[in-house]
Length: 517
Ligand code: STR
Image 1 (spheres, helix red, strand yellow):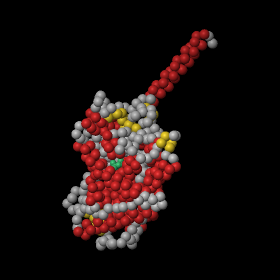
Image 2 (image 1 turned 135 degrees about the horizontal axis):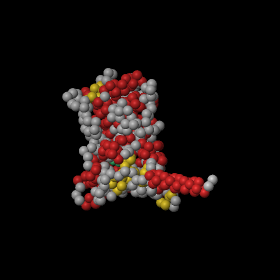
Image 3 (image 1 turned 90 degrees about the horizontal axis):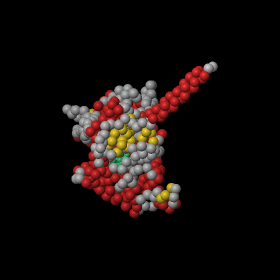
């Protein structure tokens, strides 16, 4: 080979290597790019692009068409990444769950939780981890498998059904919302405080109104949360929130003081006793130290957590029950298929119980479908990246907020056939005899480090309340009323609007019976 050939070979090899290096660099650079960004301006951020007649979960789903499934925007001075697809959502919640376990501090949640001393809105820290562990333990003690919970729910289901019977007897249509709320509140009250409310109890009425006030004003990315300096101006929402929180805190404090006064190490009446015991034993054993750092729980922590359990336990379950009733009224054929299943498996001689769950797949599928089509929390609660990290090929800087658009996951056309159609059948196997999860784009209770603590309790309540009601009544809109809207009112939970329902007793249930069967 002459010299020219050797030179040629050398030049080609060097050029090839250079190209390869360039390619790798570009690839790496491609991988470390930031998500597509909505236009943003100093001070106001992307506010101009977010003006829309639609609620945020619909708007964020829509914006995918222009910016892709994962994109970012500025809320005031905060960078926010919106995730609309399940692979990225699971990366945030599961694969890099710890990195994304932070929570933003906002004006409204600080008011609600005494600066993040609760579990749902509190930031990730050793104290938070310790706190969550003892609450998880206490909930498990009273959770699934405990006969007492089933008994408590059935007592409330019985009382709910007598109210429906009375209304049916008097021929009046009923707004189910306060009735369902009272039933669900009493379950949580029995669980937390070993007490319950009768119809019309003034303390219960107070609770109904403060809770709605909180839902209407907290954590819905209102302007004051985006621009904290707006607090210095009079703000009706913030004023209402502070008023409602003050009433709630007085009520919680009263229950807490009563429990502390007659607390005994030997009997454990309820969840609050269990929390008090865990707090005291941690203090005595000095287990409340991690890596030399004290993670002790203050009275404020316990109080705020009971507030969380209360608020989450009531608002979420009631909302799902209301959505279930709304959809059953829209779809009488689905309602009657559930009733057929109840008739075959249970009949009229006894009431449904938790052990019937396996035999009523269509009812279970309906509950799953309600949780899909109207997720309680369509945007979950925002997460925060605790260090520099990534989502898919995008880099995400420390401090970035991440919103998981659960609505988009549950209505993803690539994952669900006709996602806007209410069809419990999609959760049944091909023979219709058992349950299945047809897509992994389904996370009604979230997943990972901050997964819902009340999932088991919620599922028990949904099953028992719905089966008791549908065994005894057929629900419909009163004559000359139009069907209730399916749109919902966006807030920290997505609630259906108010409407009245006619309950018609089914054969065998025409007269109210005083005893649970
Ligand atoms: C409802 C109103 C109230 O009185 C107290 C709370 C605090 C806990 C919140 C709850 C709220 C709304 C639903 C939340 C829950 C914590 C977890 C739950 C946000 C504001 C969900 O993630 C759906």
